[in-house]
Image 1 (cartoon, rainbow, N blue to C red):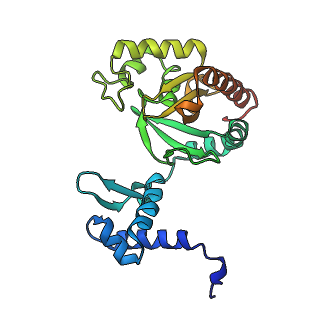
Image 2: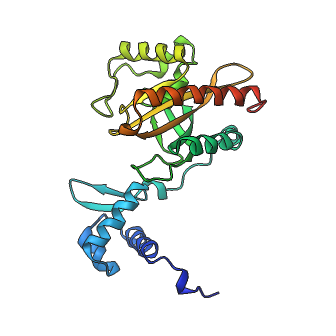
Image 3: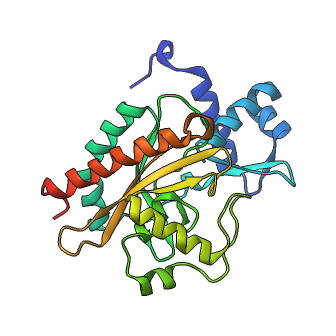
Length: 256
């Protein structure tokens, strides 16, 4: 079946051509080569590639100034059945939170010392590069991870928090004792914060989802956005809403 060219969005089509060229190449490519191969002006190719980078479809090496296919195009392993069930049951709550705040809402589970994003409902305004489903981040630098840590036993927290904490940004809490104290504070208020600790310019608030059987966290929900749009007053209000949300999920008979 032939397609009607009237409905083809040219910038999207040309962006896909850039991806095709990168996928066919056996090595990273310079902007000038990509522009030439797709018959695009360099400034236009740069903007399309920058947008693809924001979606993690393209990688860029600042040292070599060359582009390559991004991690989002790699085949991700299938989610475990438990994670798929959690995502299916929690997704409507994510959508409600996104409509209420119009910020990005994330759902993640723990895998060892990391979190893994299993669902994301993005903001209607493109503010920054968002996470992607399947992406991993450390427990210690994310609100999602710290929220999950609040529900673990002390010995499990000791195993999950590395002795030497690598900074993700200048704001990452790298002092282990200070991080453990922050986890205690998060447990008392029942939500955790990430104040540009995982990504510069982004703040996040998260609450854990506890198993109805064991009471231990099986996942966490977060709301994230640009730092200037999320002052502490807003983060606190979001934290209280997240608490009510996860309580309703548990009391509503989900996650059995």
